[in-house]
Image (cartoon, rainbow, N blue to C red; front, top):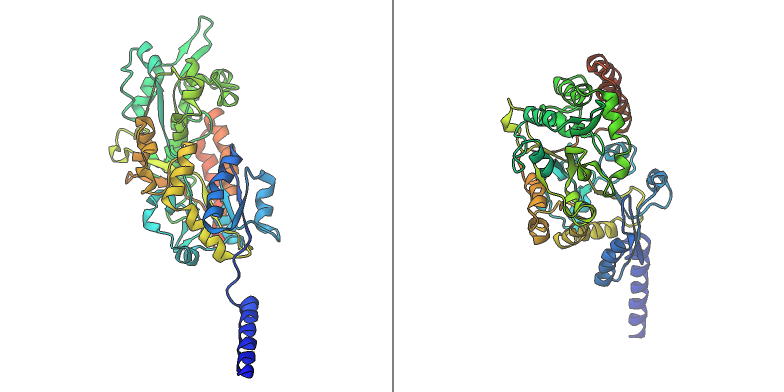
Length: 429
């Protein structure tokens, strides 16, 4: 009997040894989540402490991740278990270099319900049949207008422009000069805050890549139309005058001196967070303003409610030590309750349809404009490729030359096309 018991003990010990050596890895004591953004790191850490309370596994959050540590976080020998990026622009480039994990198996392991994601943010993470990231909250952009400035210009303060052409007409009425002939007020600036080429190009029916991401379309008609449409808001009033008036406006974004509040800019494009507690209501609570979907071209009314998602995505680094544990944590992050809690706090859009039913996303009618846009059939995403970083830099130079400098866009776009189509084809090999 003792021999049998001893044999049993030996077999059990051998089984434990085999499990430790080659079986399913043990649950980690600590998981690390690195996040590229984060104005309130403690709030994010408190959120992930809930995972610790549920599972006993500690989660250490690093936020915001410094820009120069982003690439080393993927290429180093000790990457985080989950990396949360501010946008999906570079994910395909990272995947091409083998730095992030294709998530199909992890989605199954974690039991993540892909049908709960809105199409547009999820599609930005797909590359053919591959899923390279998952969207964790997102942003969309719409038209903001100052109702007091509309009324002063003789426009109905409750009625935004219905077309891109009407927007230009309204901008004329809302652009003013002083006795010295210098601009004192602009009706609309297309790139206030930052550029919104993705939205305008979509409104004109295209993008700088083909829909499948396999070709560069830099010199397409929508690209040309978009740049020329933006250019006229500078050249019509004198680019030097407009740039002189708007100098320093970007630095005032987080203050009551922002031109949209002070009566110097009547219309512009911005994101859903502006309608939350930390921006307009904090800096200028008495501001009278409206929010509406950006209007389509007059001859393409079917493009109404076009909007482009950009924002947070989560990836699992290829070097993550315990991908099963990463999968479980990623599934927890994507659960509707956690998505609702995190993005209610930040006044950003939820990527989960169930989370979007939370009253915090629907009670404010201005914020609800963006929620409705997310569900629009015309909601789309920024097409990215393995050469996105290099192309974006080159296109930024062209934008400055055309929109601010008044250059003819056609030869510059032809040059972009000739340079980057071969690069994309090479990268796709």
